[in-house]
Each structure stands twice: as C-alpha cells, then as structure tokens.
Length: 169
Image: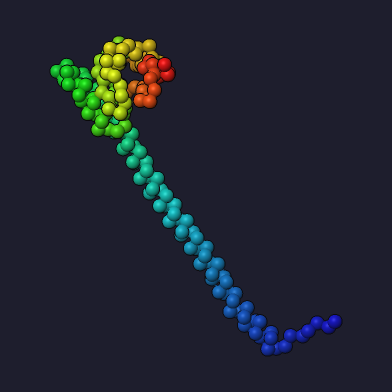
C-alpha cells in the first residue's frame, strides 16, 4: 500500500502548529518549574517559622514548672515563710495545672510540706513526715545543699500507690 503524500498545505499547517505549540509548551514547563520551586521555598520558610513558634511555646511551657519549683525552693529556705509554705504549695498546684502535688523534702528526704490539688485526693497526713530517702530518684541527689527539682514522683488519683516506689499497693 502506498504511503499517502502530504501536501504543501498539510505540511505548512503541521509546521505552523509545531511552531506555535513548541514555545508554549517550553514556556509552560519553565513556569511550572519556577512556580514549584518558589512554592517549595515558601512552604519551607513557613515550616521553619511554625517549628520556631512551636519550639518557643514548648520552651515556655516547660520553663513554667521549673520556675514554680525554683520559687518554692527559694521560699522554703526562708524560715519565716515556712509556716505559710503549705498554702503556697496548694495555690501553686491549683494555679499551674501542671502538677498533681508538690512536696518539699528536707535534707534527709522527709516530706516537710505538701501542696496537693483537690483532684488528687491525697490525704495530707499520709504523706507529711514520710521518709522518701530510699527512693532512687531522691537517693541520687547531688551532694550540694541547694534545692533541686526531682524529675518524677507521680501519684495517680485513681489508685493507691506506695509513695516511695510508685507501685500499686
């Protein structure tokens, strides 16, 4: 079967169509590449800003309990203020929303002051005077006499626990 011959009109039409479409396609690909690159850069900048904002919020959130504990430690060193320490601890626990309870221990690891939220349902007399010196996180304290933050001592309100080891009774 013989191949059909293209005429001059058809050849010119195909050449004109190619001459019109090829620059449009090339320019379109260039614009899409540029738009993709600028969009990715914008998204990266927004992600960095959002990550920075989240980092700042987390730092603020985590610094608040540390400031609370530091102020309690400084307040507990004042012998005139020791009589009001339990009330201050209760207010700090209720105001922070971060703590279930705050205990102030003396240098021997005995609970001397306690502030607990109403939700914790802790019986104050069960904890005041208790010796926590054998608890691992208390036993590992530095030798310096300066007050410090104990990392973890959790009393769950829904179960009774041994305050030294936090194991269910």
